Amino acid sequence: MWLIAGLGNPGRRYSRTRHNIGFMVIEEVANRHKIDFEDKEEYSIGRGPIGGEDILLIEPLLYVNRSGPVVKNILRNFNIQPENLIVIHDDLDMETGKLKIKKRGSSGGHKGVESIIQSIGSKDFIRVKVGIGREEGVHVEDYVLSRFRRYEVALIKDVIQKAADAICYIVSEGVDKAMSKFNQA
Image (cartoon, rainbow, N blue to C red; front, side, top):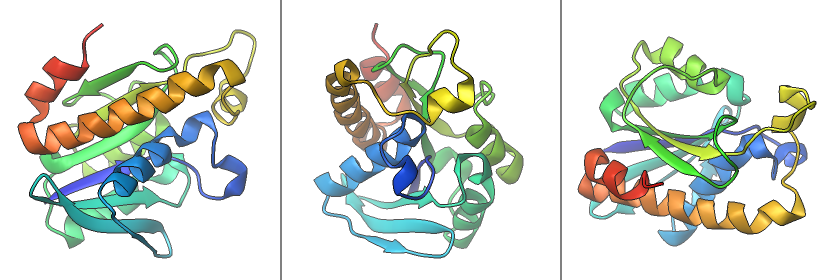
């Protein structure tokens, strides 16, 4: 079984912001595979097959920076190992619309990823990083909570599709093959 967690903030106010790219990708995966979500107190969860594998899709609802305890509880409750965890999140240090898959590593300064590392006690989980870029002179918190500019919308739609493809490929073909295919320049 796989756990795929998209990071984002709950509520309408944040629904299409840069920080919610993880939710956007999760919703695309759910739509493709006709997986419905059930709302719980701390997360939304959907379950279904992808490529013959049993998948849990989640959107933690405790804000990005507090995603770790939710992910830890679901890993424990479903007896899923960190190696079968895929986390989708925004990345300020990547150009808007770029995609990168990582097998493990540090949080890279992402507070949601850091929360997960601290909660589960492991850095050994897969990350699907989606570039949201940076803007000079704009405070980081303001920037990640902003919406995409009109000229970025096509890039974001495209990278959401690619990220959803990457997730399905990771599950069916393995992370190494997915990295070879999707981490191209």
